Length: 318
Image (cartoon, rainbow, N blue to C red; front, side, top):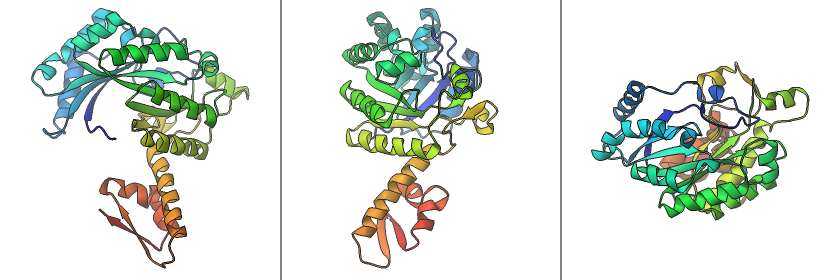
């Protein structure tokens, strides 16, 4: 199940977040450290609208992870900036990301009245031991309760997860995925844990007390998660961290499975498995495989990996 829409992103650094998770250096992740001005928000919206077709659904999205931790007047200041775009039906709704322990009925009533149609919660893991060690500051029960409240307000639910946190295993990540389904999410994001400077996780890594996933290992975990979510009609909005300039250049990246084309690596691996399975069942020297237009790049593979590995396979676009 794919929900087709286009997003106009407004990044809100976690200045109001009451917790410092062991992996978090929000400036490195988002590439900014101050709240945007009204002028900057409007310029961002206009810039994105100029590149979008009129006939696609559009949402304005406040990203950054802690929108509802901001004081109510600050939340409303940003929500009010975008109201004209809602009233004129230029966009269909607002989405935002926040913490599960900063959701309650009063907050949701205000967000609903301001046109919020999707809330993504940073669950990160649905294992209390992992959450505690990572100093998330909330429990699985908090995520469950917040999810129910969001759905009760008829707002779409997204639950974000991380893989490779301290104490995590593939089995625990799959259990988190199952609970994301059970809690009623329509959307998810999957972020491999990386080690960046200025974090407690960096100290643990330096002392040899934490080992991040290897890139291939992270791809393998995400491949299984992708297939699981796809089978349960959960739309994956992103796999892998947004490739900010800081992460691309590696100035503050110490270790971990960061790759600028992480999603493509995962889908390349999925298509490699599909191709191998088709080859096993065929006795032809030249095999033709039908590929949906939007999947062609993944079937061919990152850096044409699948095309090079399987020279006797021809890809036909359908």
